[in-house]
Image 1 (cartoon, rainbow, N blue to C red):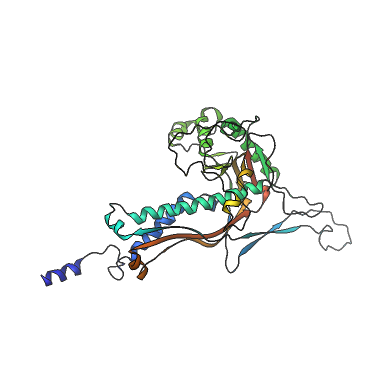
Image 2: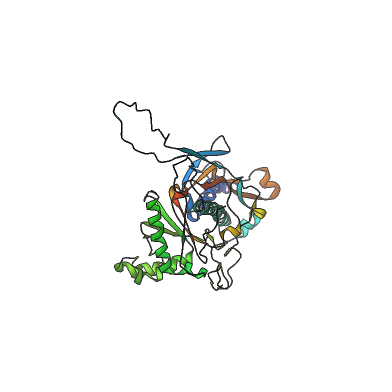
Length: 378
């Protein structure tokens, strides 16, 4: 029997070993890391739509603005020593890294033994979702702030263009935000404004609430946004709207939407589009935006207060609209060794350190509805 036991030990396949040797759990950690990253990448859309820089050996990163210059005719005999007006003007924007953002869970070893599914893999995805959600929310709030801001260039006689705010509809009802005709008109207004302000066509995108996005899809038969030959497939797949006026459209539950994230339910008003709550929505749908008074710990940039987004209902922007600095990209850490023995389980941690702010206000467009007055800057 002893010989038989030795043979079994030798031939035993350990799925967590690398090349059949070493730590029996070595590959399990890598699997967890991969699941967290896939969860983050699936949910985070803003990261690749704005300017992203890596922050090293410092707490903040400087971005430089260069304004326009002028052309002038040369007078024969005059020395050429640069324009007499000192153009182009230059300004700076500094983005500070916020404190460490984390999401963690403790996995009890006995629970893993009893579970009929891969517990760590499932938890890892949810950690990735949580980090991505916060990441996107901060960036979208920063872009909204930029849409209400003037250019940082303030040199006399060189007024650079600032942010843009486009009203969706013409009534005092927030329900205008769900009207496909109103949305299409707002897109073309925004595209024209971006053209007029000299913003590049490359990298223009929009992010809408899901119900706004589907309102556009339902009207494809009349608004001409989808090739009629593909209309049936587009409607069935729910992704038929590719772009409007050269602006690629995304949908997200993380944009500021009438002081909420996602969808705002309730009776229609100037600050509520009047969507009926379908019931059993859970606590993660229609979340209120955080107020600085309740969410100030760890925040080192200005992201605005809940009340300042009372009429916001969508964003259109170009990649120069905002910048995000990452001191620590999305990472995974997990306890092991003596700590795991003492607690009979592992703490699984996802973390990142980032900060976001608007860069070029001219590249930011905020959509608003329910009021004729543009939301005030902050």
